[in-house]
Amino acid sequence: MKINHILISQPISVGYNSPYTELSKNKNVRVDFRSFIEVKGASSSEVRKQKINFSDFTIVIFISKKSVDHYFRLAKSMRFKVPLTMKYICQTETIAYYLQKYIVYRKRKIYIGNKSFKDILPHIKKHPKEKFFLPSSDILKPDILNMLNKENISWKRGILYRTSSSDLSDLKNLYYDILVFFSPAEIKSLFENFPNFHQKNIKIATFGKNTLDAASKAGLKIDIKVPTPEFPSMAMALNKYIEESK
Image (tube, rainbow, N blue to C red; front, side, top):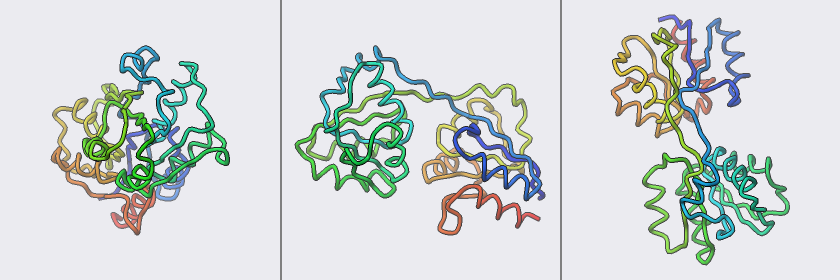
């Protein structure tokens, strides 16, 4: 099967433009971008209704770049000046580097995990007397909550933004050769927008275990699974798959 047309279920602005532009050029395929989900930030009043006061916490746990953005957005709108003494625990190195958008590294205490939430538990255990804040979306894996509840710590979750499915009615028919997904919410959006979706000859590519599990649970056949040691990025995996399909 020749691959001619690929749909990436995220907007171009997320940073995937360059490798996919190169892929499109080198492999002579069309790559479209369309966000399958929408993110809406919580308002200051919505945060207060959750009985959250940012000044109550001494450590912030970041599990995504979006949680970083919305924490500092709301801190500003609620006139909370984040103190230099605030400590941060970041699930990945990527998130930790992203923090530099808002803070000066050399003046802060930052603890970094490797990949999964489980990796940052040792950092949490080292600070049993601190008060932890976990900013998140309305969608959060239950095992994260379970892991925190098992620790003898003072912590609170704050829903600072919400994720919903985009309106994809203008797409009408999904005539693409490959659909690429990066989160379970995007899989959910696919079936909310196209309840009668049948995969047929469409190839499915997923990034991350959670997305893979959601796609499998939805009955999809996954043809491209990323990341792997050989293909850490989606663009690399697509490049190889297109080569082999020829």
